[in-house]
Image 1 (cartoon, rainbow, N blue to C red):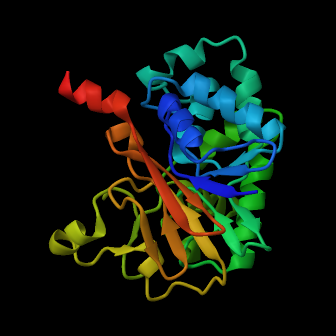
Image 2 (tube, one colour):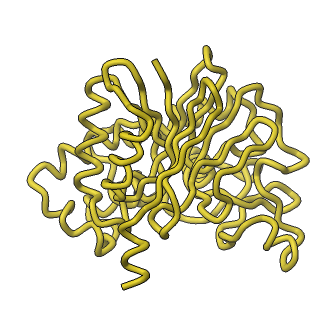
Length: 279
């Protein structure tokens, strides 16, 4: 039995299936952990969402929520204009069945036996493990209410950018949503920065004040390995107790699976986007 953690799919269904063939995935014995962003930009978000949902109903997969997954939910409730790649999904007869399933995914999954945490973007450097778990549960309860539209509308925004600056429950929700699904860099005071997407080595030359969230000197210790995606320019990366898994499949890179037990990684090229760039 193997447990494989897979980075951002973003609708790249065919590369996902090729990757599962490569690792000889057996849904009767193995389990997949998806680091969020199942949809958007790729051609086959509908097929991806249906496939992962079906696996989850068989207890063969679990997925945390990413920023593109949240944007899909918001679009389904009329709060955002969906990306053009989502038109087929938005017109699907089972759209709200899929949205309901998506709304019930966690923001953070913790496995005490494997001493691992799965999130999309990361865990705020201002949080210890207990605080992160509390905030994840709070967001999940809000998203799982019968009609989360009003909460989603409130939760969008960049402020406050620091946990210590949160004055209300609404502030905490907005900050927590950003930390779990959008975070990459922080400022020296640990507040979140939302614009920069480049690799840390490139950013260090032009904006040396920006610090990757997992390297922040004020980061509170968490005794588990944190597995995350979201940062395609970072690529597959391992440092101390963090492992990054978004290797930019939708941008013409690869889709990566990590065997969490052996720490061996396997990549599969996204040929669909390589053809698009060449053609």
